[in-house]
Image (cartoon, rainbow, N blue to C red; front, side, top):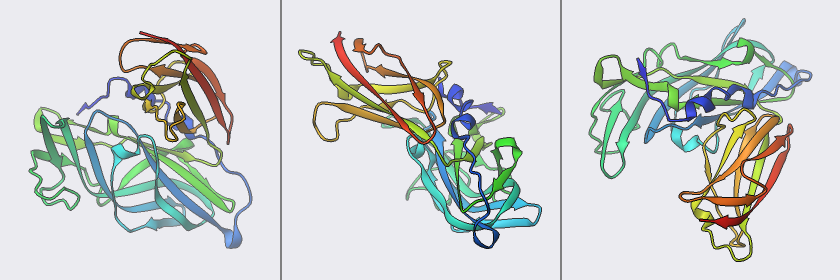
Length: 301
């Protein structure tokens, strides 16, 4: 299968697991149970849509399978590039060690091409309930046995310890690596999900502020904030700068970051800018805290 790659976000996927690596420690909750929640997010892709229906979420351990949710959830994974959704909320789970987290997917479709010009829809079935009304399906999207056996979420150390009163998992569905053309068949796509997960109890973040120096009229709303790790590997998608309270300072927030060293850049849509401090600027994130970086645009051309 030839993978469908985003230009730079494959590199971001390589660090997805490390950005959520915070494990909770403590005693088991009442009656040996732990309250478990699962949040879903996505590493972005050049696909226009990637809609899946997750019909069941299971934990598998030495004592068998625990069904965390059997209520189908349909979501466009591309809407989760800069946010998360609750896939499981406060499920009661026997405390212990589990070997697998599995998702069952009952249907899916992807949209490729250029919006407003030409797009193509590939679906698991022309009658998949997640398709918009009246959609013309171009070809097949294959999901090998994921509706029956489910697909395994790769967890840190291939095991998941559920203990303490509460546990939150962050599951990252990497769209950029999870869909590709079937070998030699341009009218067929195959879903081969790349999903990583880790416990999340003390994530950090980076808050970015940007404003113009006196006399500078650069259109801050056309720029983006970008984040890399200390080795210049892209972390997540660039975020648009917005001025929600109209005070002249434009902002962006990168969340769900592991403790470590990062670099923040301000990227104009065109031309070039000079900032103080110089972009990219190094920033350190500590567990459970958000770091703030304040940029001033001192020149633009």
